[in-house]
Image 1 (cartoon, rainbow, N blue to C red):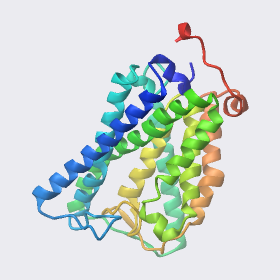
Image 2 (cartoon, rainbow, N blue to C red):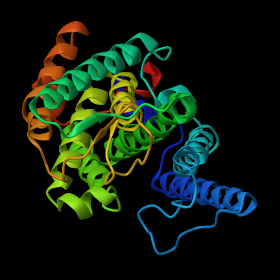
Image 3 (cartoon, one colour):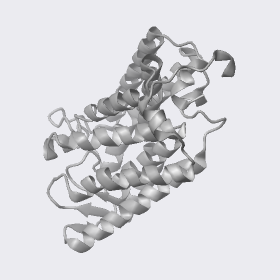
Image 4 (cartoon, one colour):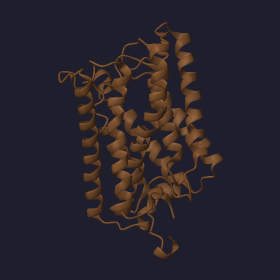
Length: 308
């Protein structure tokens, strides 16, 4: 059974998806309430005038925890919804395999970290706008927080968009290509509140949407979220721990600071036009993906229940 068809393992209907969507929203709400409670006890207060980052009164590591915490409660709500609302194995949200493949996860993570580091090294040699920012008093804690929180945050996004939503649309559309396209568009549009949109312009939506489609293709062709989760975690971890700037969503004391003005740079275009397609070819070769065209562009029919 394909990953997109994992809904067959449970009790699926329009109302189960409505109910689980409500639970995920409540999970996000609970996470934000916990953040407000923590902020109250810590005494720093919330800056309502700064919608992009209302936690500017706190140190950068605390800001990061506050931003990431709601993803953890949302992921918990989604996992519980799969078990008790959809009544199917939690594993079916993440992979069609008999167990989660951590080798795939760390392979994608490692490859993308290496590529991003190479990008940074090239840019650093071409300009003087990237400078060393290491501060041992904050970096060790930043690294510890990031190694815990970013895998949770990216797992929440991948499980929701490329797991729950992709499978839910698959239930209705019976067409992987359309499901991948729609989840990519929704993923991109929901990044509209990020400060990058205000700084760079609406063109940045293309990056989010195409990246969402890329991750959806990986999830479908590889029958699981492992590669996408590793790639996504590496991307966000790099942006918080290795190289950051003062206009993106993550404000951290990273190893390097990029002082270049906001722009949709050549590295973004290169990622979308060349790197991501190459990654698809590499992953497809290593993991022996077959019948790409058939899997992406043709409708499918559910397998008989007895084959589950």
